[in-house]
Image (tube, rainbow, N blue to C red; front, side, top):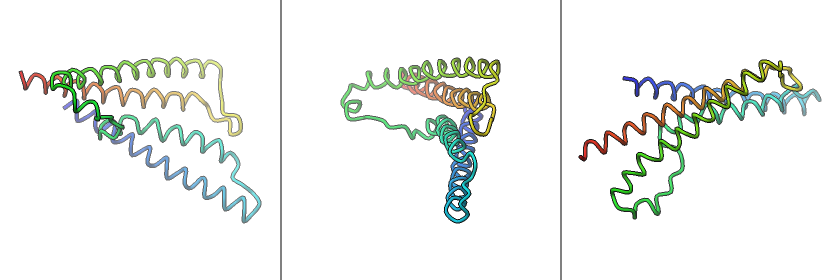
Length: 161
């Protein structure tokens, strides 16, 4: 049940990331048309593009882990004994979880600091804390996905025992 909720959350964020790609496409199109046809580019288009690219990546973390879309180097892995492969199957999600729990923690620290400073983007004066909070959301999504992967690997080991 919890695994299903986590995957739905990751898929939802992936869909939001896809929406951000669409918005980025519109921003770029409007900017180009405005710049070359009307000599009036979209104000803040570069800044919005930077933020959109970051959101696109961040929202894709959990989704990509859920669909096993990350690059795997199995040249060496497939040559290892089955026992070592099993250990790695359990260890790698724990390493990923450790990394992204740290990222989550730091993202919350950055968010709190950004709120305290009243930090805004340069041109459009958008509050930066919102975007830093999205780093936290994306890191939590992939962290939860690593927990699902770890539990699945442990259940696989338990089933073989």
